[in-house]
Image (cartoon, rainbow, N blue to C red; front, side):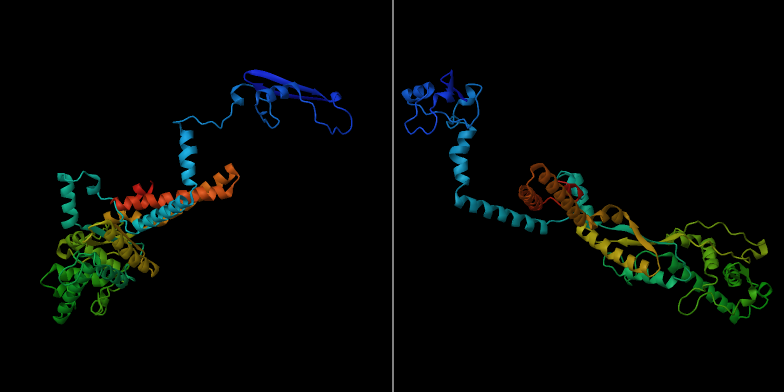
Length: 424
């Protein structure tokens, strides 16, 4: 058997070969003889390098790495940084500092505000920025509509009125001195018109003009002709014998359900200006009614209107000076809208404030979901790559702390929380 050792000594490749046959058989209790290479090392006073069974192939690989060159990064790490962070007091200081930064980040997140106003984007102390700030302070109002869709208006007229009244009680809705919303709406104006038509019929009945109406109505007033035609029309029927027996509207303010859509068609036709002011915006649009002969122009069957697919109730919102107030308004109006939608009056709010600021309602929850998904992905990927779930947990914990600290830093710097900063 042959044992060979190869090592590099001062640039000289030394090969130490020992034949097994040179050793005596059995146990040799005497001091073993030195090989030539060992004698060379002994004579020079050097220690035999340990290679742990490895064979070197070059001079550079055999140089000891314990000697560190000064003024290098490795020297800094070995001589200063590693001893510094290995100190127990420093470790405790680092833990306390990280905990303080994390708590400070949480406190900053709590005090952060949402929003992205145009005045925040423009340079401060400029004329455009001053204009926008003044507008937000003194003219912070926006138009809004409640869109009622695919609802039987005749059967839900009281619910629609209650919906408007409840939204009108909001502190964000502009009001008149009487407490009513500042904007008129189609159902209220329509009911007022029907009440006026009913008064005309009551006055004519008191004068006896409803008997043989076309003969006794000598004044030929258009209002009375229209009221009489409305009383004769209900659904697809035209029966004037019910005039004086059936009221257009009762004492509770409920429009006759049978003739509701006939009356609505007559209101849009004969009071088109009020319809335009009400901003009802019925769809599908009503067509022009066919009228009677010149002598009986307004004495004609008024057909029922097609049930509107949607109509609008207008409001003016005020006091919306920042994103927080706008988000609170949206939550309040949305809650009322959803309440009546569940009760059978399908509706939804519409307006500039809802178009541009409704994204802030779910911004926090969406951001938390996104962070949770990203964190789970990071944990799975690092665990697979390193085969070390504990290391993945440590890295994930550091990333979460950095995210919280960054969010708190943005809040302390006065940067508002919005979808743009949320992506940071």
